[in-house]
Length: 113
Image (cartoon, rainbow, N blue to C red; front, side, top):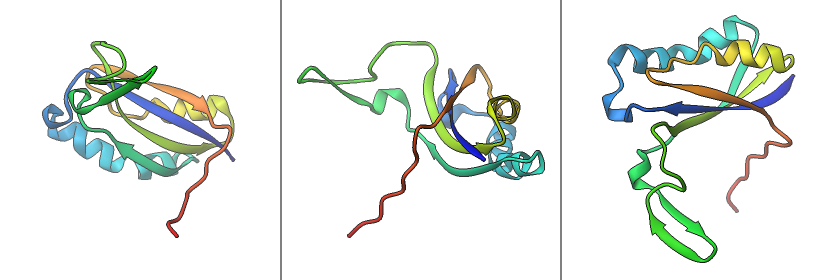
């Protein structure tokens, strides 16, 4: 199975997500497994206002770019092929935003020590 990064873009702050959407995110790994895929890793991000950007030696508070939608999280998905990954990514609950699916070149988990 090939691995894909699914980037979640959302215009709603994590704290403002409706409870049914939060619960749907909790159920997503099982739903994806029922449809022949597997989530191998996932991360939720704090609000964009908590970001610090480093660009060309300049450090500034805030996200890299200003947009209505911000990256809210990312998960690594195993799927048969790109079309399958897109179908699985469509299961991601979104209030106002979308998802982006990208094939991974490599995925490595580093261990301390």
